[in-house]
Image (cartoon, rainbow, N blue to C red; front, side):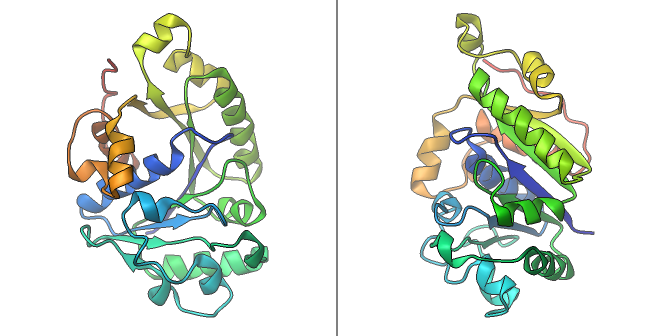
Length: 249
């Protein structure tokens, strides 16, 4: 059974795209057939983070409009045979999709028997992303420990609940105990209280995330510590495993 997961944030700069890339790579490495969809029309960069820029040709808008099939547009990752990417249109003005077209696209995706579908979209809910959210089974709201990010995450959580997403959970990114002690970030417990969400995972501050993104190499394929370990733990929780939270330095 396909599980469609919307990954959202209330503002930019939370590391949402890196989380989508890391968690999807971890799921694929565990043998799950995974499709990632870049829902950020005009500002897409998931193909860059995954090292697939030279492979993408068609977008989800091309599939939803009937111009090409999903099989033609979804591109296989060069190193992870279970991971596929469906990118966003390069021009946001070219999207213009109706909600029923998105629903048709989601039905096609379910018929392809992907085990997990992760949808990475813009901060906030753009029209097509609202339709993706309405068709999703779960949502992950990504935030940092900063108050501005938490305010946006709380608002996003309520919007997703309004879309009748059954399960909405929180991922707290770029956590550092040093920043918490200095007052530059709140604790994980405070983040949960501020958003009203149950915790899915915590990801430590890790410069390897930016390095691997610049190289177009999924971080979980090169290491299993720091952020890579956190992404793997989140992937395992999505499959139903009971995994303890990692210790944050």
